[in-house]
Amino acid sequence: MTFSYTQISQYLRCPRSYRYRYLDGWQEKDTRAGMVFGRSFEASLGAYFRREDPGAALFKEWNAYRDTPFDYRKGDTWDRLLHQGIHLLQRFAQDDHVRVFRPTENLQVKVLKSLPGGNEFVAYIDALGKLDGQKCLIDWKTTTSSYPVDTSLLALDPQLICYSWMTGIPDVALVVFVRKAHPEIQYLKTSITDDQREEFGELAHSVIGQIERGEFLAHSGIRFPLNGCTSCAHLGLCLHQQDLIDTQLIRRPGASELDWLAELSD
Ligand code: SF4
Image (cartoon, rainbow, N blue to C red; front, top):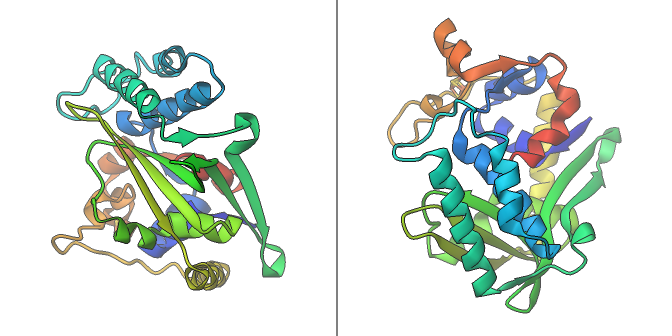
């Protein structure tokens, strides 16, 4: 089987949710405008590094969803997201902190790692480039709120640790595009240690073992402030509420063969 960070993190959040998604094929509907916009925005970053017109690329990608009935956050509209995106692209170009050479090779880099037992692990790295002149692995994020300014916390980001484990690259960075009234871009760097990479390998190995043994016990959570179940797309399945299932989920039998696509949705 091929595993990805998305799968490991979903299993760790709740093994039952993992089973619903990857074995039973229940996937969340693409109704969140912010998530779909994030994918369009990342495509426009590719255009920026290829020295094409990133604004035109963003319009083209996002225009495909102009009439899609998304759940927009309060105050958001299709136009507003587009303008925020254009603003962020302009700011990104002015800042000029990030360089990606040979963008066809160094954007959306597919990395495969063989695991014991014939399994493999796949990751799609957003970019391999330089941030303020320092070589690093880069992950883009589009969000509506800023990340904590205490960058020491970043060294505990499991996705960055995973990507560092996959590539062996210790220096990692998050470039966070914050969509708000005055758009902001955060450039956050950290280093991942050998011990962290080794430990992630052990974690992945342990999770894959549990999946192979068919251990999918529910890790329910409804205690403030960690209300895992209330933000879980699979809540309707656990509560047997058909209306919730119908509004949030779509069933794709055989979804486990498309696991690599999940990685692209991060
Ligand atoms: S609703 Fe709660 S218990 Fe059910 S799958 Fe989601 S996180 Fe797990």
